[in-house]
Length: 146
Image (tube, rainbow, N blue to C red; front, side):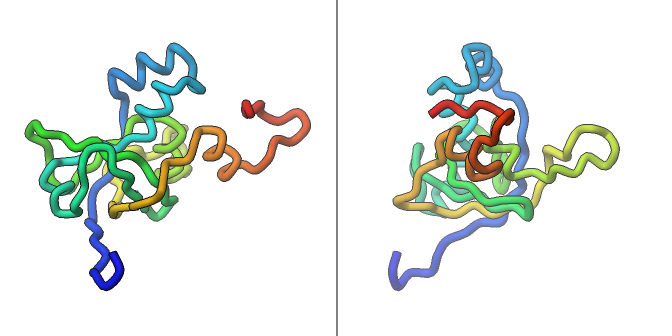
């Protein structure tokens, strides 16, 4: 993209359950199917076209709380322009505020964000994501498979 203006869209991020996220979670959160589903973002085909994206391309989503590379899933059916959906999971958790405002539940919808192409980048594996967010395993800490 040298010499070209970097393309970026302001979007609203929403997170939530997907049928696949829920099904694959039952097989284990370290499974390939689960990881692929929850490291994907679903976006309107017109937004994808504006960014020069195709289905499966890497995109960077940035919020005031974090920035991650995910895989784009371009939706053909009628969707909302300017809205990107990320299924619940560790990747979505890195993009939302940890503040719960006393409710015990963070705000998972209506988050201002940007999305841009991320050519040559890949989503982090679950293990890499957890290490980046929480550091190496400490004695008595959570187990992160190698």
